[in-house]
Amino acid sequence: MHFTKVIQGSYYSSVSSKKVAFYENSLVCLNDEGRIGQIVQQDDPTYHNVLDQAKADNILWTLADDQYLLPGFIDTHVHAPQWPNISQALNSFEEDWFFNYTFPLEAKFSDAAFAHKVYDNLVHTLIDNGTTTVLYFGSLDNAGNVELVKSCQKFHRRGLIGKVVMDNPDECPDYYHDESTESALADTEAFIHTVDKMNAGQFIKMQAVITPRYLTSCTLEGMRGLGELAKKYNLLIQSHCSENNTEDAYALDNYNKRDSEMLDETGLLTDKAIMAHGTLLNNFDLDLFQERGTSIAHCPVSNGFHGTAVLPVKKALEKDINVGLGTDICGGYEPSIYQTLRQAAMASAMLSDGVDNSIATDKRGVGDARITADTAFYLATAGGAKTLHLNTGVVQEGAFADLQIVHSKYPEFIEQTPYTRFEKLMYETTTNEIDVVLTQGLVAKGEIK
Image 1 (cartoon, rainbow, N blue to C red):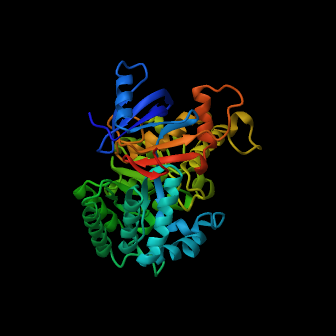
Image 2 (cartoon, rainbow, N blue to C red):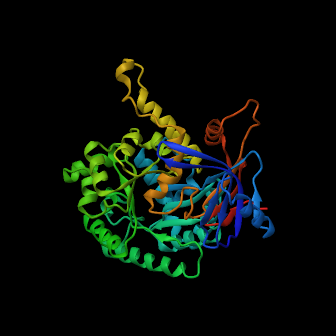
Image 3 (cartoon, one colour):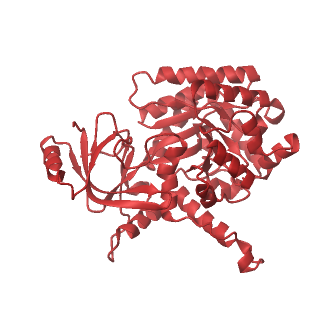
C-alpha cells in the first residue's frame, strides 16, 4: 500500500461519547486520498517493517516526546460575516445586538473585496486554533459567500457554507432582507450550483448548506421551499432552534406551536439538520429531535451571553441525539474550540449544581448533568463529525486525515498518566501549543519535517 506520510507518535481519539482512548508510539499512515490508510500499533508484528519502509521512502515524521496527535476540531456553528465584531457588544440586549451591530455589519458583505479580506483572516485564525472543518452561516449576498468558499480553498479548510435566508421583511431591517421569497430560493439554488462548479478540480470539497436564519426571519413559504431544496439536492440544513426566550416565544405566540414543530412542519427538521443552541429544548423537543435524527450545535460560550439557559448535553446524548460544538462567532468571543469545550464542561457543572445560592442545595441544580473532558473532546471531534455526516473527527483507518499535532504547555514536574496528560491538553492548549494542522492530509498550519 502506498503512503504519502507516516506519523510516528502517540495519539488520542474518542471511542464513545464517554471515553477517549490513548495509543502510544503508533504509526499513522496517510494515503494520497487524504485519508488514514493504515494504523500500526507498536505490538503489531509488521510495525518495524512499516517503520523501516517509511524511513527508506523518506516519509517518516516522528513526534517529539511532548507532542501528541489529535483529530482536527469541528466547529458546527460560525456566523462568518460577524468576525469583525468578535468580542463586541456581548452584554447588550438581543435586539440591540442584532439591529445596531450584527445586521449593519453583515450587509457589508455584498462587497466581495471586503468579504475577501475578512474571510481570509477568519479562516486562517480558525486553522491556527486547530479547527479543520467548519459549518458556516454566510450572508444574504452570494458575492460574499463565494469569497468564503475561496478562502476555505486557499487555506486547505473544509467548509460547509450556507447562503442565509431572511425573506420576512416584517421581522428584518429594511436594508437587510431577501427581496422576496422567490429570490431567496433562487439565490440559494444558484449558490448550490456555484459551489459545485468551484469544487471542480479541488482536492478538498466544499458543501453548500440550506440556511434559514431562524423562524422569526423567514416566511413559512420560504422555509417550505428551502426544505424542498434540501431534499432535491440531498443537502445539510442549518438553523437555530429555541435559543432563548425571544426565539422560543415567537413560535408559541404566532403559531401556538413549538419552534421545533414549525421547523418540522416545513420540512427542515430532518436527519441532515443541525440546529444551533437549543437551550430551551424541552422533553417534547428532544424526543422530536431523536425521532427525526436531528443534531444540535452546542454553543456554550455564546449561550452564556444570549442563551437564557444551559443545554442539557448529557440528556441529549443519552437520547442518542448527535451533538457537536460551535464557537458561534460572534455571539461567542473566542474562535477556539479548546475554549468552547472547556466552557461546555463548566456549563454542565453549573447546570448540575445550580447557581442560585438562595435555593437549598438539594433543590438548586438539576443533578447528574456534568460532562467530563472525554465528552467535551468527543463533542469537538467525533460528535461534530456525526452531525455533519462526515468520516472525520477520529484517528481511525479510512477517516479523513484531519489532524492536529500539539505539545504540552508545561513541563512534567511530576509523573503523569496518559489520562492526566489528556486533561492537561484539553484545559491548557492555546494556539502556541498547536504545531501542525492537516486537513485531508494537506498541511494547513506548520510544517511536517
